[in-house]
Image (cartoon, rainbow, N blue to C red):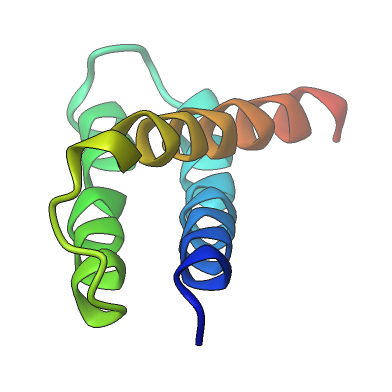
Amino acid sequence: MSNTSAITIVGSMILLINVPFGYWRAGVRKFSAPWFLAVHLPVPVAVGLRLMVHLGWRFYLLPLWIGAFFAGQFLGGRLRSIV
């Protein structure tokens, strides 16, 4: 697998993993324990994906990972408001 396709796949996976957590987050009170869980539980999964594909801690990719994370949370919250 090429480096570019690995980056694309991991970014997409991070986004998709965060959609259900964003959906959950949008349905609970802000800054409550479930809210913090909905925001922070997908972090180890995202880190694990990066390490599993050997992308590791490349700091130039950090904005991509953070953007995918927040986009997934945002889309999940939007999905909840639509449904």
